[in-house]
Image (cartoon, rainbow, N blue to C red; front, side, top):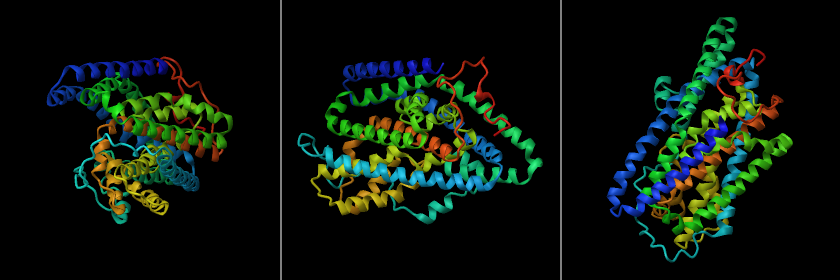
Amino acid sequence: MAKRLTYYIIAGMVLGMLLGTALHATIGDEALRHDVADYFTMVTDLFLRMIKMIIAPLIFATLVTGIAHMGDTSALGRIGLRTMLWFIGATFVSLTLGLVMVNLLQPGAGHVALPLPPPDATLGLETKAFDLHEFIVHLVPKSIVEAMANNEILPIVVFSMFFGIAITAIGEKGAPMVKAVESLVAIMLQVTDYVMRFAPLAVFAAIANAVTVNGLGVMLTFGKFMASFYFAMACLWAVLIIAGVVVLGKRGLALPRYIREPILVAFSTASSEAAYPRTLEALDRFGVPPRIASFVLPLGYSFNLDGSMIYMTFAAVFVAQLYHIDLSWADQFTMLLILMLTSKGMAGVPRASLVVISAVMGHFGIPEAGLVMILAVDHFLDMGRSATSVVGNAVATAVVAKWEGQLDAPEPPEIEPPHAPSHRAAPYPPEY
């Protein structure tokens, strides 16, 4: 089933690219292109809305059930500490690799053919300095209903932790609620299965929309920049997988096979959020206990966006190169440290990477206008960023499970047909 869906998604990407190219070539009026492309966005937006309706209840249910089956809060604290240590290390590596690769490849050098926008041009993005007080206070939801309505992952995680710990504290009295939430997990995974059947159509529409508006020619115009960035991301994938192999052994080499469908979903929809349910299931088949995956993975969506991290340093220095602004290594290291902090408040912000980059560039005299150059290909870059974040979070979750000594024997990487017995049908057996 997973293999068929993968093929359908690839077919959707190819067909969307062909139709988008044909429409871009035949429709000369730019305004009309946007009007036609808007019809495709309806399909993509519907799919992403279906994904968003799953995320909040799925995170709540899996996290609460996972904590309830941990048995003691000391395990929760230990897992949380190990998770955050890995995330901090992965963030530092991603930001550093972005700096190293953009300096080695120099994608912004020699772009004399590209007309640069005036330095005082703006993107129209709302940028403001990182507010630690606002970030910390916002971690605790004033209303869990509001947090779920807005799909704010961190506040949902905080409430779910309180809820799960409380269920553990009251013992047998909480058993009926645990069973109810376990049922909710199974129901939401079944809903996920229904929703994912629309993925190939959504992928087709997303690609057709992007290519209809911009055409494939824009990829050739920014070919050096895009090729350099994708090469940098490939290096990051290699670093992440090697780090996983160091901890997991040879078994770490098999992880990409398990998460290939979530990677493809994230890449084709340019949304790592769309891949969350399938990533959870893939890690279950890989042998990660649901109680660990359901805790580490939601945190990763706020603290471990490796694709966005490498993009921030890469894009900022690329713009500096376009405007012939020489940044010393001290300046670049300072930028890295600032991004280490400010990027942690970016979850849930539209065009979050561009917002954070724009806010940081002003500290170093880099014109925000340079980001206008990237907007034309930002969708194609976001596809790679989303897929990279899925890889980073999957490796992190598997590593934490290994550190806890709870990595189970793997199942086949393919999803079983609905009529066959499935581990997913009962994601939290009694021995958990």
